[in-house]
Image (cartoon, one colour):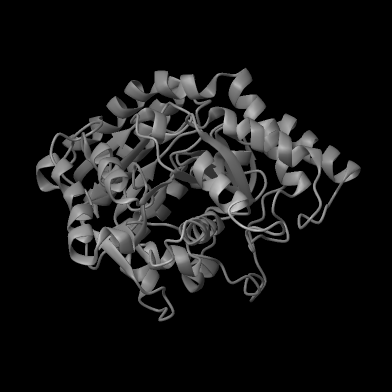
Length: 443
């Protein structure tokens, strides 16, 4: 391991403006990870930190996978860059086929991006292009949800229902309306899908009745709302959204950026809940977090309508310089191979009960006000201590120095372990959470 880095010169960290970070506070007392392997990282002071959130939900196969590193190295040495506009390379087609193979039946076409945020904006544009190709260009309205998170590009911010992500930025898209979120008081401490709340899907019907179904292009939902605190869909909720969309010609888009690639014990949440959307966005675990990459998978009707609906030439005037980058595609293929060879999606399904039981053991602590979870993901709400996020931000730091990383949104910790973890790792995470919560309660 590298020698611990324990001191800093004045302003040595100032050049980097960090994302979603309290920059002044962080640079005064930084938390740097200098090495990672398996389910652990090591901080700059030499301490070991167990990764309780798979990075940002993107490293289910664990850190330091040599197969992925070797694949990226080979790609860079063999074919480091190919312009994706009008040219191609074999690896992107191989990865697209690999992804299509694990998507629900009929979702057979994959457009590559560089992040989940880009995937959302790409999906928005594909929806517009599809309806226009069908002669339904009046469908300009989009439906999302309160407490939704769909990335940070302007389209995703417009769809998102997290006020702090929106309030600084005035250039959001018009014609976006929000359904209510699915957290309900009566569902506190429900493990798996809650019984109450399926009727909240009728909010989409209200949008149809209010604005006219023929004006709505698509409904965007995270099957499990991840970054806002693991809001698991009530039983029947997603099925009802599908019914309303079908009845009104509305596209149903699942944001699978967090749920995708095994987090719920299946390839995608669409299979976990047996509801097939028209479009799925994905990123994160696509490459096990080893290269920036996202994707949008669409059904045959959308692809055939957009690609076959106009004259010969470019059908969709959209793309990125690094769409389907050779190194990212190599990382994606290697990651999918690991998931298959080690049967990690099945492993996640088999570990889920043990993991969720461990998280629910924390409900006896009075500082914990709710726990929600499905598969290998759980949200733990802490009682506020001042304005929203103050306790969560401080607790995240406390937990890190106690040897565990967990992603916090406001006062909610989101625990999402790597699929390679053993029961002993789940026990270690639970012990560190309990120790840190007891410390928090005593201050």
